[in-house]
Length: 321
Image (tube, rainbow, N blue to C red):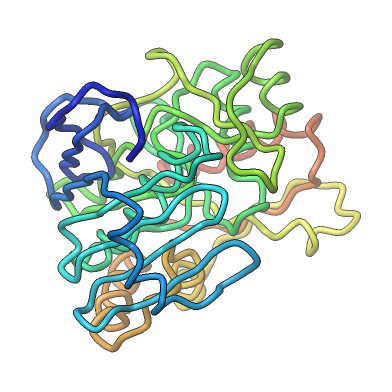
């Protein structure tokens, strides 16, 4: 991977999966029962020559392709490239020369890992999740909807992060359980300085954004699975307009299902087997997890009030149940 030289294998836990790597990763090493296993290994540029020929451009700097053997190629010009085996159990990795190790890990443990999980019939959601009073609260939304910024307001108030951007849920005997991700959060500099620390810093996520990858200390993140209390689907900033109030609206079961489908982290795999698993997973979640629509003005000065509204709503849901 052109990475730190401490040769592995190293064994980690994230997103409910055991992740092994031939180099150190910024992940908890504490062993836990796993619902998936993924082996990440660095390979040379030559290993991707054939795979690149099968890939087409998804956007200006991202390529994707499915090879004849069912494996999948993912490449970002300024980050690196990955080859995910057809069974999702192995991810071959190569970091781009210009990419930082932190940026490369974000893509490896986010986009690339999402393919491995889906191929193992696990459906990750595009969500950022915080822990309040021992329970998880998840914020659903596309990129740019403000999930991480809202989570930063919770961190500022003393709550902890469970995962940023990719969320894996599992049905347990006591309800739905949310699994932890890496101990970092991606924030724009102004938000990081306001809610984490004045001198907050980190590597940029990629060359096309100012968003920073900010490492969290042990008091700011939760490394153990936590029961899910509620989800909030964030209204897109463009749909908020000049809204002055903070509005929480419960979603009907059908709307919960559709909102969960929209929040699927991986939208590139659309074969019938995956779609059937996705449909079944979202149907079950829609039936047992409270989901409310959260609309609010996109102002950094209002995030503390949004946090208070979320906590009040979660308290009301708990009283009803």
